[in-house]
Image 1 (cartoon, rainbow over the protein chains, first blue to last red):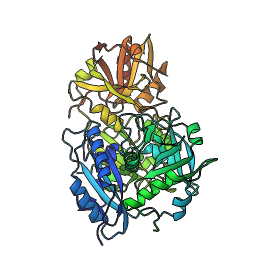
Image 2 (cartoon, rainbow over the protein chains, first blue to last red):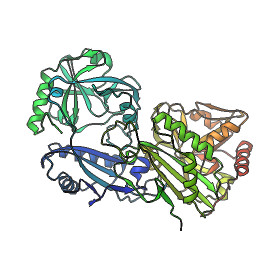
Image 3 (spheres, each protein chain N blue to C red):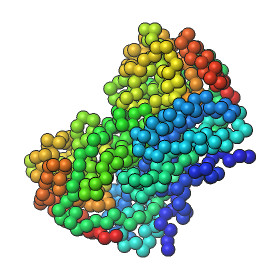
Image 4 (cartoon, rainbow over the protein chains, first blue to last red):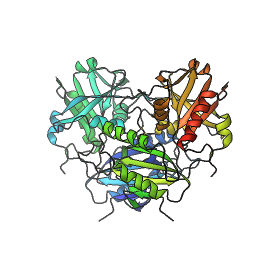
Length: 275
Length: 275
């Protein structure tokens, strides 16, 4: 069987304990859904990775090499999530980034989370997390390796009937779910939270913003969400998932959610997946 | 020669690429100054580590084992910094922390940074960082592995004449330096920034707060610092270091700084160290 993990191009399951990814979370990652050989949002993943490398002053990856290695680790898997980590590599003790870093790349394939047809048809139940995301414009939008806030937020519940937690920032503005972006239809308009202060700018979100005739990024608060006619989550791994409830509030999937689910199918993503 | 790094008690230089420390920065670390066999602030390091484990819902370490392994990796080094990493261990893909985590521990010895007598006598030059630390009370105070803010702040300058950068939060309150805590004598009173919102609560800082007759944790802003009679940094690795300047402002080391430097010598720390 093909190796499901490559570290710097070599079959391996370990990284240096002196890697700055391990020492400081000094790096980035992407979780990319493959259907056979194809990753329909590949270019958007690579665009985000390159943009974030520039912001963190990390060397840019060779995207052709990443694609080759992604296909290698998913070899013969009909469905896969390929996780690419791209760190500042091995460094001396201390925060100061080396002038010429040699990044570490880890490319690994996993089976996608099983997704039930009912989830796409009826939606998922969510809760409001207690944790408030910190506002850090210099890190906002990036899928970097500093994810303790998401770990703490996800640890707030273990009821398997609750699929996701929604997160606000310190100012009470909605940001996202713990592992997906948030969209709502409010007064007939498709809106998603602005991510200038915190949050991860997902590639599924970017796809919707690029293809929507009029979708707006703006500040959204809980009362705005309460009067939304539709609420859904977007994720590169899970696609477009209706939100059925947030604690005691409920919504029914409507025409805008269905339109984006159709778009996802047209891109080539299955809307169900059994492990 | 003794191995200078132990991973889960075994001589090794690698960790699993699926370790949550590498995937999400989901863990903690301590950097502990050893003088021979002795680590004068050991108990404070272990106290902070245990407190942070409780806050992150991580299993508590066996501190006797950590001490044994720390002594093993520093074997025959007259001076050492022992870095202990304590992560949530290997996990599945996804933020949700495993119900029963098996932590990964990495214990590694390094030579301390060389410290010149002139640094302790006259102090260091510092700059004000542009980056503002994000306010996250649920992570404030801990020495966790999410350190991208410190990496970005430290990357703001490369003039070797500047030893440190001071950091404010988004509200303009001083927090710390990139790798040390901050103290000032203002109106005759020893003060250090409150760390309820962000920053790392250093063990050297804890030692000073515990031993000072009257030292106060409170909000400090730049105009407060400008009128300080003394400013110094505290660090478990470097000890008590006077701040000579912050950009265009200057201070002269005074009696309070000297008193804490004497205290450090009495604890058994050298105030100079040549590589």
